[in-house]
Amino acid sequence: MSKMLNVLFVSSEVDPFAKTGGLADVSGSLPQALKELGIEVRIIMPRYGAIDEEKFRLHEVIRLRDIPVPVGHRTEIGCIRSAFIVGQKTKVQVYFLSHDNFFGNRDSLYVDSSTKKDYPDNDERFIFFDRSVLEMLKRLGWQPDIIHCNDWQTGLIPAYLKTIYKSDPFFKDVKTIFTIHNIAYQGSFPRSSFEKTGLPADTFTPEGVEFYGNLNFLKAGLVYSDILTTVSERYAEEIRTLDEYGAGMTGILQKRRNDLYGIVNGIDYSIWNPAVDSLIPYRYNLNTLDNKVENKKVLLKKYNLEFDPTKPVIGSISRLADQKGFDLIAEVSEELMKRNLQYVILGTGEKKYHELFESLRKKYPTKIGVYLGFNNELAHLIEAGADMFLMPSRYEPCGLNQLYSLKYGTVPIVRSTGGLADTIEDVDLKTGKGTGFKFTEYKGSALLETIDRALKAWQNQALWRKIMKEGMSRDFSWETSAKKYLSLYKKLTKKS
Ligand code: ADP
Image (tube, rainbow, N blue to C red; front, side, top):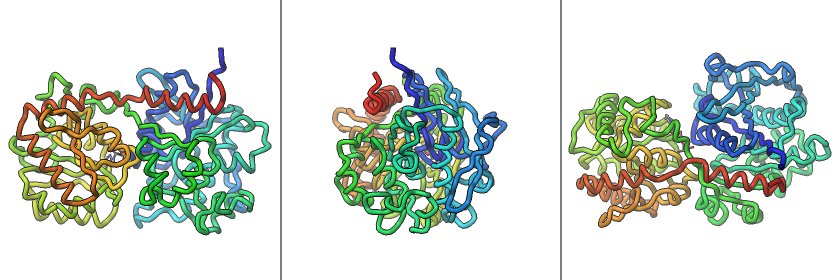
């Protein structure tokens, strides 16, 4: 029998400990699915101040108490705490890298909540994180076959392995996978930051970690990892072939095309499933769909809107960023408010969109409900209570909310890009086949036409139920995708 595969999964956010977006959902659920396939997988992330140590029972790992790590000319000392994600079938060990100044004394992950700007020392924070991961492994004496890195915050790890740690016998057989969850966030810093990495000077070239004079963490991951993946097939193709998607990286991805794979994200149906969801007031499934309307009533009350059975509720849950298509929503907002519908939004992000939604709420207090902030419980209630889910992204690596929406019978209205294109099937109004409403051209008029098509379908409740049920029966659980990761791990390690 072959030896068990050991995988270290490295991520800057992991649900349920710390989350700003879909990366956390994936980092919390994929490792469990991998473990169910027989892989020994462990996770490492930073210990941010907002992580509740008591609730999650974090404890110190005594022999990993003082880990010296060079950052520029200084030596910073990290230590490791540990806890478990306890799932239904497995539990996965999570290591937390602790450092008060870099992580512990800060509540938010990347952005200073008072200035709304990135922390000025994000370079040092993640140089420290990446190098600590390797130092921690050596001290722990646990040798992974694969280090699975995720997004720019982890991009230096493969670069360190191929340079500073190249002849270290401990890492001789360690391979790396780098997963791109969003190519637009790259961790780009001035040249002076490169000096702090400790990487050899000859890596600061366009073939290495340099990108137009800057240190680029993401590029380091793209150049030095053994295998690259991203979170849908369509997005893999978009970022490799189209400049407007590739964010400057099409060249390197083209070069590495044989090492680039698209694997669609799964979702955790023990968390996102209206039949078992403990965060919603009324549970339901395919056979008890009438309960959904009870959630709708509770949802509307939360938003101070009147329940009206003739009006469908459209929901959005999102980072308020250009990526998510809010400029299109802004463009059609006046027209939208003329339609017989209500709209509820949950999100936080760019100031211009906070202002947009505030002003719409003032103008149309009976039609739109606005919650500007992060609220997981409300996110579940929107999925359960809304009739439609609006996600007109400019680009979307995978997208999770449209998948949650399918499971909750909340019919998605999406732009056909990236993972949205791969996971939503456009409804044929004649036959009722399909799971959502899609448009392609990035234009307000196309969005409005598509919303109108959905509103028309909603008028025919028998047809609508058919569409809901079709979506609810789709299976986006992790199993299939986890097996694809497993086969890449095996390919790298030649283990079977
Ligand atoms: P992205 O990772 O680009 O932000 P995804 O659709 O992949 O987008 O994942 C977003 C995740 O974050 C989902 O789980 C969604 O419910 C959650 N989320 C986003 N904004 C909020 C918010 N304001 N409050 C609660 N959850 C949110």
